Image (cartoon, rainbow, N blue to C red; front, side, top):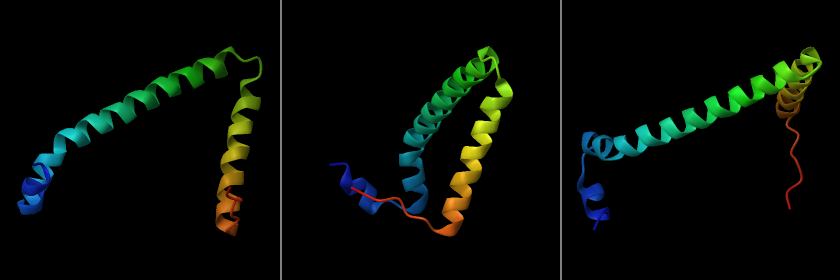
Length: 77
């Protein structure tokens, strides 16, 4: 069973066991980030007003930062 080797393993053995999953996970997240970033940049380039798009992104980032700093909680359902 897989649980037994993990329970008996030392810190280094834990790292060796989980390293392939970490590499694959980081690769998947990186690939998706590159794909979404390229799509967003193409959208910005093709839009008629790229400054408006970047301004909107900046407003959203600042708004999230300020609301987080103020401690505003969104309602949960």
